[in-house]
Image (cartoon, rainbow, N blue to C red; front, side):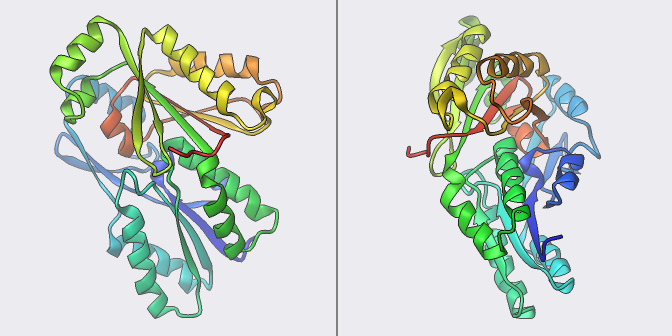
Length: 295
């Protein structure tokens, strides 16, 4: 057992069982659905099926990050156990939680000056953030100290590649990210936007692709072009999806056929409440280790 705590948050979109199996702790974000606040607790309070079913019927959503007071209580509990902490946050490019965690760590350090708290901005999201934590847990188990692991994360986090596509633009309209007119023409012409996470951890539209069939081919091409060691890629590959498992399985099947050295099958997770409140149903996201993000 490690002498420090490796920690993240629920927006890493791993299952509760996965977090437990790799001994990574997590703190929960919050989201609001039709005026009611829920913890983003990996589907324990409200299932992904119910969330996306209600969103498809027009439910309103909003989200809130973990605040400083919550982080202070969370970190303090581990310090009281005599543990140092490596806490990896959701990307600062899409959330202010890195700042909240950093400020909380300063407060907790004043109470427990003998403890070390390392805060790492993942510059990652959803199960890409999850893959980063999964890999960090393996590095911890290889014997890296807390300081060494924090340093490894800082040096390698931009090698975690994220690619997304969406076949349902309704939540993007409700969130004000695209206009109703753009969504209308997107539907008429079967436009599926392809996006990725850039080097600043921001979600960036990269290409408009016509038809679901073509965007599935396009996202698989991205791993062919960018994976570590090309078609000899031997790392893990994670997918997260929102109420479109068949699409996710289609992507996974193509990848498994093209990458025979993968470390296990492609793991498919649900996009959780925090990220899903913004994307809505119909999003598939692909994550793998590859070329360093430079734009």
